[in-house]
Amino acid sequence: MTVATSVAAEVAMDVTVRTSDLAEAAGNVVRLLPPRLLDPVLAGLLVRAEPDGLVLAGTDRDRAVRLRRDATTRLAGAALVPARPLAATARALDAPDVRLVVEGSRLAVRTPGARFALPLLDLDAHPGVPEPPEVVGRVPGSLLAAAALPVAGAASRDDTVPAFTGLRIRAEGERLVLVATDRYRMAVASLSWEPVRGGLDVLLPSALVAEVARQVSAASTVEVRRTGSGADRVAVSWSGTTVACGVLDSPFPDESRYLPSTVDCEVLVDADRLAAAVRRVAPYAGPFSSVRLEVGDDALRVQGSDPASGEAEETVPATVDGDPVARVFRARYLGEALSAFSGSAVRLGMRGVHQASRITAAEPAANGVDLRYVVMPIRPR
Image (tube, rainbow, N blue to C red):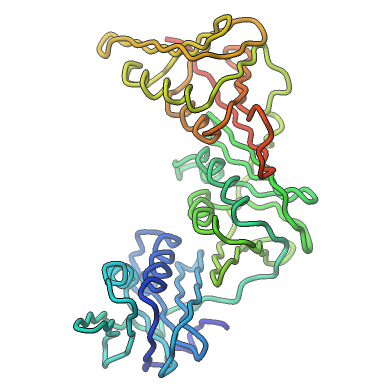
């Protein structure tokens, strides 16, 4: 099914859908598309009633989202309405079912005892949502979520350097490798997947990948799709949902250059205990929140001090292999890296004062996801 400009002539619709399904689907579309769209047509949600269900779709011309939900259709048709008001209305309703019906220049949202009417937008001006590209591989949703969420957290939020806002997804045989960096830290994860055809090496917006990862966590299978050999457009499909976007055309660093194979000192420590210590010491670490990790014989001391804030120190039990060292890190970067390994012990490997430190799980993850994190230390004040 292609949602295109041909729907402009369809101005009637009458369909009943479960309220929870409508609220979830409309909310997902809103979260997957950019939050600020000045064009009211592109800010609209295309609602299409078909004989076998309800389709919700949206696009900003780069991203495209389409979701299908079960529904009872009395009159097939389509309407374009403001997306956020529909999502907010559906989320607030407590009736089990909701009826969507076109009434003149409004889409009425009806429940027993209530009616909400949204203005119809111009369907003629809507660019449509095309069919998704061909499948190149499949991956369990839980594995994709476990790998993509911590990796996406390492990407930059600074749009002035587009490459570092992206998350690179690369296929290597039966493994899928995800990489993101903001130049001060880097996260790399690999997971098993089922290749179907062709290769895959693309750079996608990390914020979009993170939102997709949150939504696919319960899906048994996620299909990864790609347009042509140039891979100028990528999509993922799961459980009646398809999300597509264009790739970022930017060079991306080779992660192998930044993953140290040897370290001067390696510390085995509980990730949650160290993260909690960093969090408690950070308020005493000055305006730049720089915490110092000092390795002792059988402990790791987390220290922070600042003339205006005071000072704090907390000792965390650890097993040390190598020469004692001390390094200074941004508290937020270190804390976010450790939170990616929550519930497990990690190996913190440190090298020279100006060289990257690596964080890896002490034991292989039960789901087979291999996550590696690199954090750059900073020059002590």
